[in-house]
Image (spheres, rainbow, N blue to C red):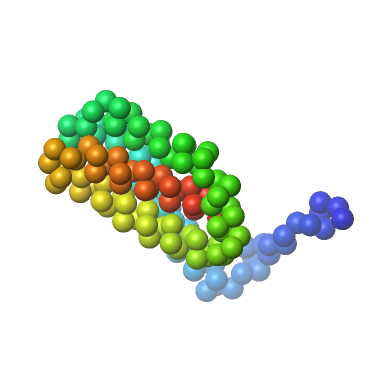
Amino acid sequence: MTERQNAIIVPPAADFTRAESRRGMRHAILASCWGAIPQIVLRDSSIMILFATLIGAGEMISIATTALQDMAQALLILPFGYLTARTGKRRMIIRATLTGMAAFLFSMAAPGFGPAAGLALLLALSVFAVTIGACNSA
């Protein structure tokens, strides 16, 4: 088979009904607003390093906050690919997204843990990093 025969055929946007176009636009807006913000805050900026420093986390924890996602992705891509094949993409993405959301909210509550705030932040960000790896492998 040629590469062209194996390609998935997606109808052009002109072939979508008005309702399908509006639903797709709504989903794209939601994904842009809520799906990317935590990943950008945790991985591609110094906001989390400053947050970790402000709550009194050590230097190792504040630097580890930005490296956790890449480490989890590298270590867990194959196991999560296997799990996705066994459980299905939809189920894997929904579970990972809900767990990641809870972990992200828990990381924002880390200052409430007093002296253990750094460890709570590290734990929450570790769980979030694992869920990002699960979403990316699905």
